[in-house]
Length: 207
Image (cartoon, rainbow, N blue to C red):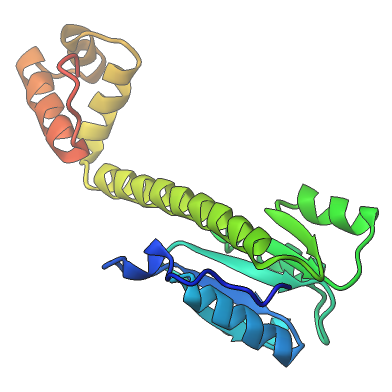
């Protein structure tokens, strides 16, 4: 890794929002310290760990994040850690770093969703570019997750009858047809539709 940094602090550092976090897992303390300094200088928050087990004790991040992960670790390998957290940390892209690498290892990591696979030594800018790419992917994933959670919460607020009306309207039935299916008046169907639109925050005039 190059020790040269830009003389002016990166624009990310001036953000008023909570900075994204970059996790680093590497058993070499000199690598951890070097990466931590570089990441903080770029304006991101850095959290470092000497082992996979230590990282697993860390709670899930609620801000855009990514993981810079060494392949060779004293307990779990980086590839094993990738598999272990694949389902629970879907919004955390992984950037692998290694002192040695081969094609099968790289292919395995990339097939499992890694953003990048870098062999030491590498330039700081190469890693920073990969980190920024990973953080953007994380930002998108978190936004999608938040949108889905909000939608699920709104749906959970519907009454059983409102859910029935919603399903029938979504299938293309007219108010009169929905009323016939449910044994209620067209006026009642319209009232339920209005409630569904309000609770689901729907804006379509056809709903």
